[in-house]
Length: 210
Image (cartoon, rainbow, N blue to C red; front, side, top):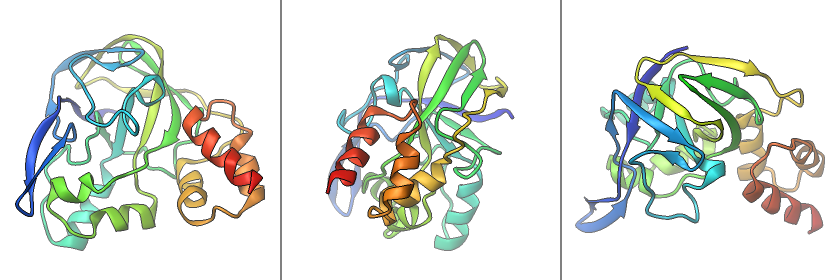
């Protein structure tokens, strides 16, 4: 697999229905960039409660979804349009498992959680209803932690070096998180994955106690 777009960006403003919004969703393509344990050099977040940090150091969005959304909403969505650092084909949410480890350029990264999307996705792309559909489908993209720092280039290949034996896909976890929170058996299965991000572990553990 090979990167389609590699992107970073800082906090910017844009307009949505005559209101000024502040976000770091608007990223620009780069040829190469250093990836540290805390994220890409030059990449920042506007809301640290939901973005950034060691367990959300890298955001990936599957390239295949762009065609789906463009067809459904009848618009063209510039890439990257979901605030992702990496756009790539062949790594959809049902193909990737929490705890999977990948080599990408000099760096090694590990899947930690699905992305919890917010209304900025709809606002930035000027598409009412996009957030709702992203949540309904579970096509949220996902995050990684960094196991080994290093330089990543826009033509770096992405190689799976370890598949997590629990094989809990991002799509499965998203389905439970967003649509089936009373499914005790499924939640217990997800929590068996040691590599699951602490934020998700806390929320799912709380659901079990209710």
